[in-house]
Image (cartoon, rainbow, N blue to C red; front, side, top):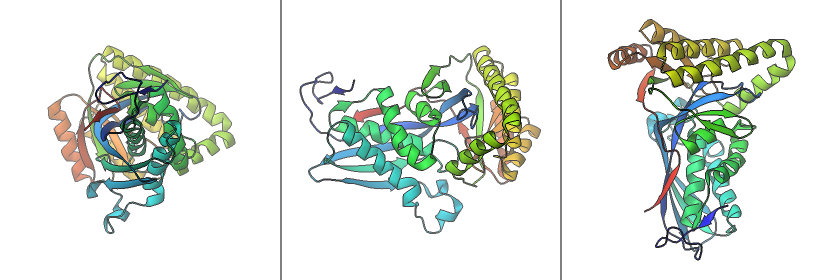
Length: 342
């Protein structure tokens, strides 16, 4: 059950005062199981230190007003010239998230101003929409004196994500909410994963962005028209995720890299990769990566590579930059969504 809070008495259930709140939620990468998680296989995902921040300020008017700040380099190339984010693909789900939250806490006519600051590349497979959605839900509810639990936030996050992605698996939302590394299985099974040693990871953006809804829909369609092949694919996906969990728990980074490369090959076979993704994965491995794969829906977006040490990671980053990618050093976020009074 959600708790009602006052600013002066953090545990109080007596008041429903309104205060400005700033919430933050991480982005995510998928180590194994994307697409197949929609079909019932488990996925292994990790929250990363790219963040969406949302400031919520209740007001005396009605309606939700949203201001968005996204670094220009994180927009799709087609959007950079105009510096405009398509309202249907990005802004409308944010409004839906805020309005769903107001309905949930019985304040449907409450006015609220939202300022969104997203440092996560958009439509790149890093959970920008899920991160921003859960940050909005957390900020709006807390600003109006209601502390929603993680399970409540997870349920609400499906409303706008369904608008954007059709039939989301839930793995993005769960990872952004809980943080750390998780094993996720539909519809809502979230299990934290204890890691022996954090893997040394390098992210690389192709600059080619995608529409998740279309890619997920194509895989679901193929799973129905190519049932025999997909039974085999699904079995392999489950096996890979089991292996990834074991490698993380034992700290076997070579095995983790090998399994991630196998996962990429599986995603190639179901048609969700892209020539530039494949080129960067190959380049990363030739430069010394222990393994690499696309992360997220595919069709563009990012790859993630496992590196043996920091020197190797710098060499791989230089190689990927020469090959037209934009590399980022990433670390694991351990906290998930968090909201504080400003």
